[in-house]
Amino acid sequence: MRLLVRLVGVIAIVLAIPMVTALFWSGPLESLLERWQAEPPSTGWVAGLLIALLASDILLPVPSGPVITLAGGQIGVLPTAIAAWTGLMLGGLAAFAVAKRLGPAVTRRLASPEDLEGLKSTARQHDAWLLLVTRPLPILAEATVLLCGTLDTSWPRLLWTLGIGNAAVATAFAVLGQQASEQEWMFMAIVLSVVVPLAMTWVVRHRWLKQQRRNERVANEP
Image 1 (tube, rainbow, N blue to C red):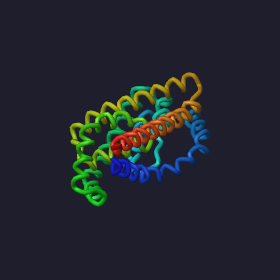
Image 2 (cartoon, rainbow, N blue to C red):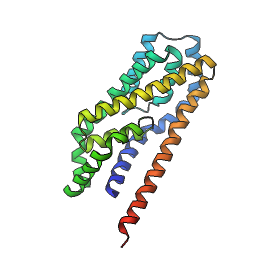
Image 3 (cartoon, one colour):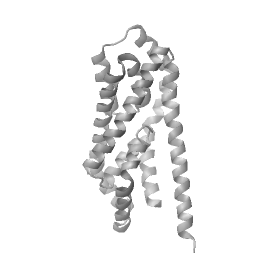
Image 4 (cartoon, rainbow, N blue to C red):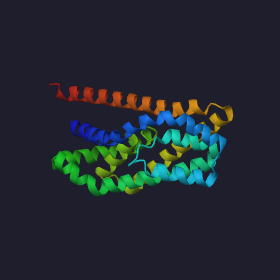
């Protein structure tokens, strides 16, 4: 189990590095909102940009929650949800394919064959709910996809869990954006779309690590 924690930690650290630059987004965000509201772009342009941004989320520090929320306020729930789902799926599938291709070489360096088989067994038991639960969580969502690809989760299993989870996330943020636009509290909605997922990430990580330490203490008791 310690190896699993270490592997997740390595992936999360790699993904967190580009997220540091996202801290610099808060300054221009309000002026961007004002420009978009003054001169709204076309639905097709917003949808295409949304797909491109979310598809590149594994490489770029794209805060998916705020981006989807902003688009929902501009073009409505249905176009935003469809475009966001498409972008999230493309990004997730690309990350999974890369992990499938390159991940085994990394795990062979970190784990013995026996440990690796144990990790794969654990993944087969828990990968579906981990993929679903972490969908709205920054860093952990991408880390889970990479971890599942590394530990040989099947393509069909990934597709249905990722599809359902991404649909829920895309729809929820799109609804938030439309409601915020109608009620004229878009800036607050953008802030919430950042703060709430980050808080959820901290809670999930804290509880998970606490549970792992408890399990290790139980296992080490005579």
